[in-house]
Amino acid sequence: MPQTPHTEHHFTAGESVRDIVIGMSDGLTVPFALAAGLTGAVSSTGIIVTAGLAEIVAGSIAMGLGGYLAARSDADHYASERRREEREIVEKKEAEREEVAQVFRGYGLADEQIAPVLQALEARPQAWVDFMMRFELNLEEPRPQRAMASALTIAGAYVAGGLVPLAPYMMLRHDVHGALAASLALTLIALLVFGGVKGRFTGAHPLKSGFQTMLVGGLAAAAAFGLARLFGGA
Amino acid sequence: MPQTPHTEHHFTAGESVRDIVIGMSDGLTVPFALAAGLTGAVSSTGIIVTAGLAEIVAGSIAMGLGGYLAARSDADHYASERRREEREIVEKKEAEREEVAQVFRGYGLADEQIAPVLQALEARPQAWVDFMMRFELNLEEPRPQRAMASALTIAGAYVAGGLVPLAPYMMLRHDVHGALAASLALTLIALLVFGGVKGRFTGAHPLKSGFQTMLVGGLAAAAAFGLARLFGGA
Picture: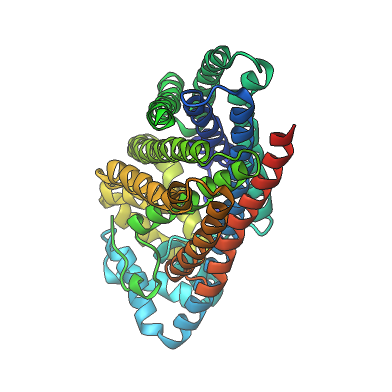
């Protein structure tokens, strides 16, 4: 694939940062909300820790394997679309020429300005296929080792995030309400910091991003707490 | 944005289908694994149903709001990058001309073939910005109402998926092991069917996609069951 220059002016998150954000966003939120919710219904920290750990294991495997399969399926999709384009520029040459022309007409180019571009692409079938993959289908070639690295990063970030809200329940074994208070304080601070750091990578204002992230976690926990108290009492 | 023709030959999932897949993948997997995990540690269906419902509420809110904020942040990112490109084609005209040229050199075009394209883009600043957004930065303009629709679709799919594994525990209130068996059977079938349908949209073979999806859910549930039995006994 051709590289375009000076993209570093437009900073976007790298793939690993993106995977950490995906895993940690859910890891900090869902086990936190589950633990808070169960505190509204049961009085044993043992059950809450067990449920929390079961959730962390289930969530990290589901998200990690999900990430692995998504990356694998992106790679399969790219390969099959590429084979199709390789066939089409031979078998449906006229239609493919017309597609290239339409891309450029969309930017206001006249047919006599498009003709030399068509000529150059026709002389280089691989470059023509590259062009169609990027500009017609908007697909980029995935890196081969991506799937496994993505799976491990997402799962690890989920586990790291999920242990934050559970730690107080593990340490304050005989004081479930004290554990809830400590878990709330610790996790809301972690969400604020994580949201702020995330903002630096996504280009959002760190303070805005921090408070939004804290709000999502807090709302999920409050809703789970209310619902569990409702059903746990019944 | 210019439209390219005949993309319907290369079928890819629409945005709603994608949101349903995102929500239901996790909704069928995590509450299932949590319920199975807790069955390894506690003997009351009441606690399992309460924990499961708390998880569904927490997970659907976290994923739904997460989807909403992601869509909003995509829109902000697009707008800010667009403003930057609008400035750059005025203030750094030569650098931007060179970027367009490099895109085409990557496809093997000579400078005299590129010159008329540059000329056409320079005559139409908005088309030039469109071109840079798509071909340099690979960003597409997000639809404005996307954020809320995305949030509700993801959350709804999560709830629908999550109620499948919990239903047996709600109905077989006095037989926790019977409920586990029914939940396993029901959810594995649901994962197989869901994975198969998902395969039709992602282009994967339905049978392969079905078994992969079932495997992820099954592995997550088995790991959660094993871990909860280990810790629940302690």
